[in-house]
Length: 262
Picture 1 (cartoon, rainbow, N blue to C red):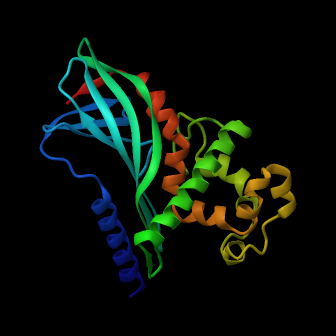
Picture 2 (spheres, rainbow, N blue to C red; picture 1 turned 90 degrees about the vertical axis):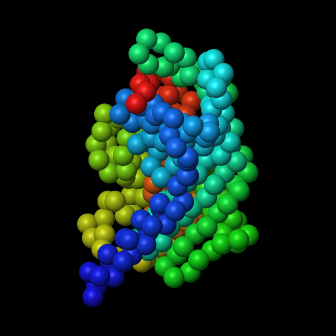
């Protein structure tokens, strides 16, 4: 019975993930770069950019037929999940890319960097509780705001690498996010000999306030000591990794590789 329940939860989460993905019409062409970036352009111009460095995240917009072609971003779709729920949100966004023909492929120039603006949709499922409508929008926006600030803090204030290749696995970019950034953020969990019971951490009973005060800026103290940052990390890890990598992938990485059409 337990195995059936686990399979059902995985199936439902997969179904929700598929349902939140952006739909496009018949594909005109796809562009690939470095095995990590894909740009899908539909015949009507609708365009979706994805990357293995941005799990659960889609950069959405329109590509015109001018020469050079221009991809104008209109929104960003994000999804993150854990065994007991998920977070889904969609943000209004802007950014402009031009595709320049070169030999057998194309180069991408960033003419206006990607930026996130207002949240358009937000939903969270936590066990059997669903947060939708204005409440879901508010909770999802708060979660993304915390994650964006955490990513900024790690890269700007603490000078961690500007990109992480995976949550767990070692890649060409170094050790996984959990082993590097995660170990710094939550040593109480990752340095414990017994990590089977995290209930006390979720209740904020064993977070080291001295470590928080020493290593974190004041505006993050309550969020870490209360367990809010841990819950974000535990419940939507893909979103945190994607927001951590987003500026690099969308504004730097995309210009480093020639794209090939398929």
